[in-house]
Image (cartoon, rainbow, N blue to C red; front, top):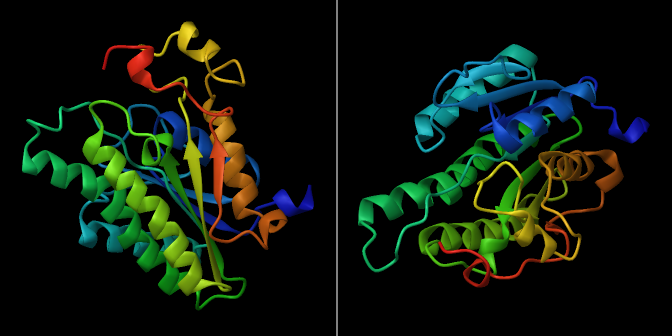
Length: 242
């Protein structure tokens, strides 16, 4: 259990005020970490850790976020690039502006934040760890997710590229997340029954994977893609209408 003690470590979770990100942040906080979370708007309910308003699609906002974290806690040990997502949109009619926003949120923002985190982590004792939250859409696109799937595929490759360049000081790993219970009401129990694990993932399943990848137990894990999808999914087109 000592390897999962994050006392004295600082963890930044993007999109950490609700959904999966909130559970990730709370899990690290329970393990003793100093936690910083961000979102564009202040949450109505108090979020775990220190809330810093930030639009991760804006490089200047990302810089301010990392600067605030280091100024407050003196270091940055773990970055969880969790902020992301997209509404469904038909590829034939989606606007260029929409595509730009989706790619900016799901690929460019993690890249920018990882660069900023690396500058801090490489200069401190113990280095650091970056965990990117991806999606099964990166390798198995669903109808209506062209921009999102392409961005998430880029995030998976980015993870491997950064791990290659930044080890051993900074480890960079990826989680391929499947259907999460908090995502959408359209995912029914019928859908869950088609997953080998027999259920949708809970946010805690992803949070625990983050905790492991950022911990000393994973000190030799770098550039990995950890599948947290219950064994895989039947394509949405055969189960629900997008």
